[in-house]
Length: 227
Length: 137
Image (tube, rainbow over all chains, first blue to last red):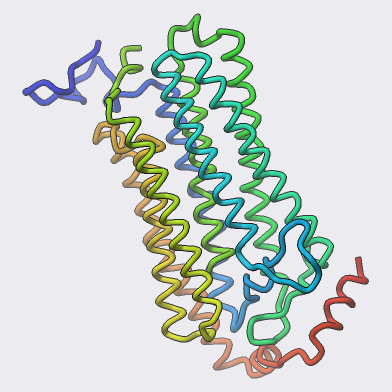
């Protein structure tokens, strides 16, 4: 079944009797699921881009997203809070990689430790997002209502807030389900499910999903907050 | 289940650390450009080129996450191709849809005088509109 990939003779992956992708079924299907999810997010972001390109002006993200919790009245700190959110997600992705590596080395305690860190990172990100949504809602922004003016001082349509809440909401929902998946992985690890099974491949699949959530945030962060 | 031990190199530890550093540096670069962009005039060449630079940095970040964190670089070519080739559709998506948006804007500005007048009329009182909107909720 196993074919050495380092052999001098190139492996004939399509000759039958083995997986031509050299991964097990679940992992391949996770990749295909993530590809389909990429198209969903891509469609949302391209729709956002199309509407933005068809508008004469657009709200300036540096005026809209300029707050952080506990800041004093009248100050503005654009990009600061969202940078923190971005780093939280990157770091939680790193701890997830470490959990996957520990799983490959069959080190249960290390898996548990890194999974807990990843879950905490996910929860921290969700809390940040909850705060930001609440803050914007108090300013009068919601689906169908946009208190912000365009960059050139003209009246803005509700497109901006509609896209913002839909896309960050859809991403937040992915973070939420990722946290749930990681919690299930943690419980399974603690119950020695993977030890008995002899491998931690399930963690690798959960890891793929978690990295995808981080990947989508790279795009959402750039499209909404930076440009 | 022999695949569990695939691609277990001793360089893995360094790889994770290096990719973390690269992602952090790229994010910091993006943020620096974002802060620089605040002082640029809307629609100026400088601002547009900064935006393009940010998009290139974004794609570089995406590459590092997919290639190293999601391990795709160390998978065999068949798997890489089955994932990457369908994604090239995005090249067409982006060109076609953004071009369509741009064209719609230009057509409307040329032929719909009313729409153009409304969308270029500046709102007089800035602070009052905030509180009025807030009062509705």
